[in-house]
Structure formats: structure tokens, C-alpha cells
Amino acid sequence: MAATSRGTGPEQHASGPATGRLMQIGEAAERVGLSIRTIRHYEEVGLIVPSARSEGGFRLYTAPDLDRLAVVKRMKPLGFTLDEMRDLLGVLDALGTATGADRAALLDRLGAFHTAATTRVTALRDQLAMAEGFAGTLRDELDRHGGPTT
Image (cartoon, rainbow, N blue to C red; front, top):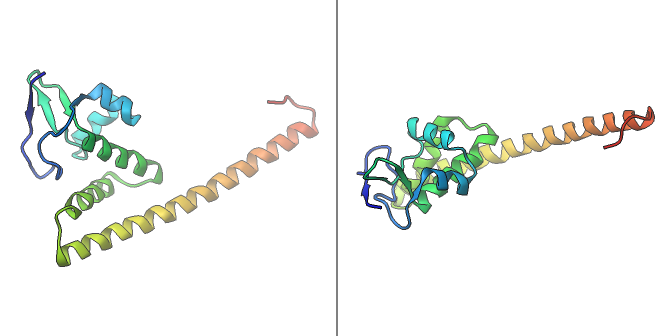
């Protein structure tokens, strides 16, 4: 399978041209646990760009591409917007080569994302505790009234 690397454009990530083993979108989707449709959507909105395309035009992904998809997948349940996801990916990409004041600014932005993620995780834990309490109340009512057991 011959592949052509994509040039580095504004939406291209720092790993540059395809490196390592190339995977078609179906394998990438399976490995990351996302649907093909979702990965295509992320490409359309500029979050993830495949590292290469086959001569037939098929998207080809590398391990670093899958790492980026995993970051996006983990951000989604925390309610981060597509713009926030894009921003974090940009920060992570830039940290690899940044120095001095630029690096310090990127680390500050990364810290802000960490704070936001931690806050959102706490809120989700609170919601889960409330939901579990409600389910427990319903179980108690079923038990009290001789309802079905599951």
C-alpha cells in the first residue's frame, strides 16, 4: 500500500508526515473506540488530520494520530467544546518544541485545562452520587412494595 504524506498545514499536528505503521480509518476507529463517522467529523472540523492518504485516497492514521483521537475522546464526556479540544491539541503540539516564555505560557494554558478537567470530573462525580442515590431510593421502594428484583 503506497502512501502519500500530507504536508504540514495550519491544521496539521506537530508529528508532521506519516511515521510508523499506517492504519486505515476502520482500524483506527476500532483501536480508539470511536465510530468511523465520528473520526470523519473530527477531520471535517479540523481536530484530527490523518497523517497520510493512500494512492486511492483512503485516510491513513499513525499511532500519534490515535493518541490525538484518544485525547478528544476523553475530553468529550467532560463537556469540552470542539474549540477547546482544538486549543488543547494545539497546546500539546506546541509544547514539544516551545522554549522560554512561550513554553511557560503553554504550561499555564495546560494548567488551566487541568483545572477545568478536574472541576468537571468533580461535578460528574457529584451527579453520579446523586443518580446512584436516586436509583437506591427506587430499589428501596421496590423492595418495600414487593416489586421485581434485578
